[in-house]
Image (tube, rainbow over all chains, first blue to last red; front, side, top):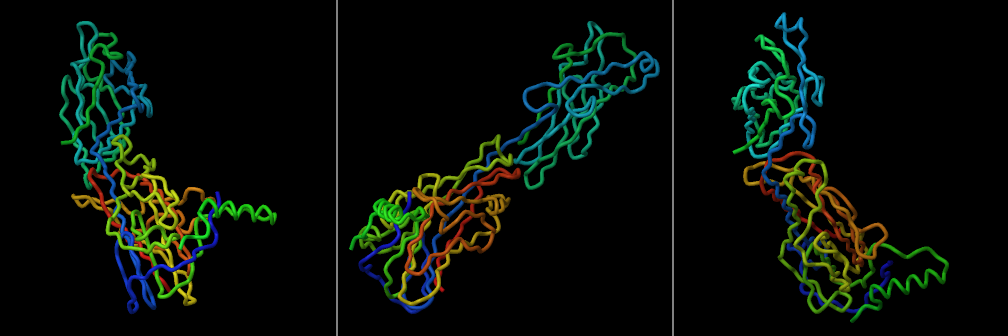
Length: 196
Length: 215
């Protein structure tokens, strides 16, 4: 729709005549007089940012990654470290992101106990985690609750991303079998991120 | 004295004239000529404002109004720093133009900005400038740069370039638009927060001062 083009007839009463320059300041305001005129109006802006902390380990969303170690007989004999497969980064690795805006983030990890295969088990300390970013150091895995790590905030903000690569150290000889699994055999690690 | 044409009527008459003349569309943003008068007078309204004795086209006279409106947004926790711009709203109740009462802005998403410059002295246009601080600040001293706030410009029924067009605050002084001598001009601004980075929790505030100045 178009608008009006011309117009206005009539007299508007003028409230004051003052020497220039005249300045007013309000949210509607006027100024009148000879010479340069200035008038101002203010607007306040407000942005509310809530507290939050978020954690991603592996694929984004609700999916749970599976890291698998399948040492060969030779590796078992040699007791040499074994790289994994699976994960959403390189083989045997996951993308990890911690974000928050309420100060330093505490990063925890827990398991239900050693990985089991029937009556046999592998201690979680046989699986190490290397990080690509030292500022985002994962807790060392353990049977039960790990010792937490901290992600330091700058101006109360944490925003760190790293790749965590898992390795089976293979330093203990164990009976053959499938240890752990998809949420079975104590095969799941639960990571937590928290702020005070 | 009342205006010669009401807003809708003006459009109708103008369009009829345009059609009869086989001319171009008359659609445009809302700027309207007003009668020259002395002494030189300027009026600026951002958000709510006051007029005495009716709208301008009904002989009303400009008045001061000290109410400072707030443009705000609460970012959902899951969206903080996502890079998805967040629409801001205003507590302004000014949807109608003080020129003629036309419902020009849509609340709560839009903030009215308008005014006039009237003078019998042949000068150039009056300029509207906005002065913003570098940052919005929360109680902990953390900051959000003011250039994270932008606006689009429109008005109900408008199709042409706005007198106070879209922009982004610069964290300093900047030109918002201009009003020609003996003209009323107005726009509705829709603000948004760019939300381009994770910032500390808190309530961030900052004040922008709009100034209308004659040459």
